[in-house]
Image (cartoon, rainbow, N blue to C red; front, side):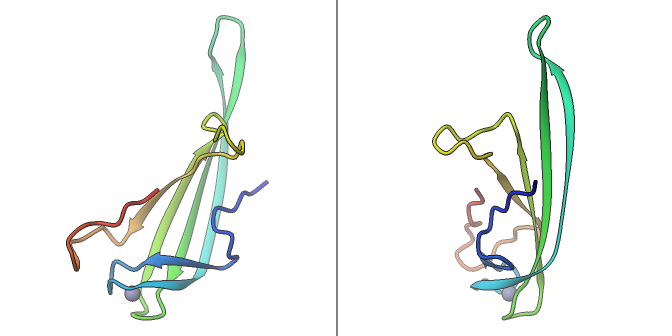
Length: 108
Ligand SMILES: [Zn+2]
């Protein structure tokens, strides 16, 4: 099962670190993979944790550059309110550079 963090289908509003615009970008590529490992949390208890990694490549319509966003989550990191996996998003490309006000945008 693939859980989608961005609910707009193939579009997502992102801050473009190339041109500095916050704009709706088209997703042009996506990948996801998962790995399940077994862990001994207690002496005889075996717990399985599945780690998910997703990558999304977005094209900025303003400057025609791409932004690569990696999403990481696992089955041990659950939101207590809606029981969804808490995801961590990292912008892999471009590297966050000083632009505009010089303050990088906070990534969830
Ligand atoms: Zn741009």
